Image (cartoon, one colour):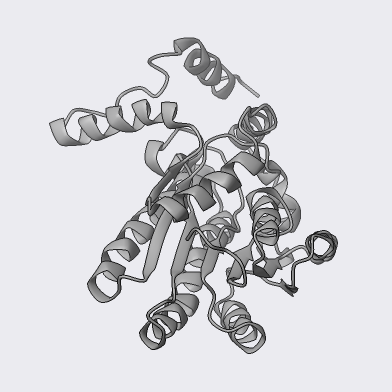
Length: 303
């Protein structure tokens, strides 16, 4: 998609991070923009900023984990702008810790947002785009789903997050194949960022009250994971704005995989070689054993 003028974008997680930077680029390109986010106050401010760039904006407060709310978003988009040309299923939350220490509520929250949120977006919007393509040979549509390198690398002490993002990888690759069976006008793309300053380490602030457990205290592994995530995210050298540009470049080039840190693919290659050869999973810290040693020591500390 090289020409953005007058086309329609739907962006979830639009009030910050990749979503907001993508909305800025869409506005500069002349797109009409639906901005959806769970945080109402942040969404209001972000929508005002994008309007100031000259874009026509429809803000929509949304919990992507709720199917009915995503359906309502699709209906509102059709009523206001018609079928979207670009759907960015981007909303996400982060959580870490040893995989057996995640509570049932942790699983419900993270999978609800990161995995089901993308599934709801695919389910609600893809048929609208296919119908628009069938009616107009000039229609062009792109579905971009945000996964993570975590979905390709399965790093330790990040279990629930890894699972959610691996599901998005599988879903989006399947979407690519399924779309190729029925259309040449609607395309899928998979965004796999690594550590980028986005604020995802603060996502706990938006956890719904019914999925919180006030009586539960974070375990040692969860505290360690939170500290490591904050350090890695806030010190990232690739910006969210750069990643947003990567998304538009991929749509223009017809490229499925979108990586913020291609150098991390060495770990993906090792993992695939493990799987193909049948050998046990390679220690993820084999190139930096000092990091692995520190993590093991922290996890094995008493009291």
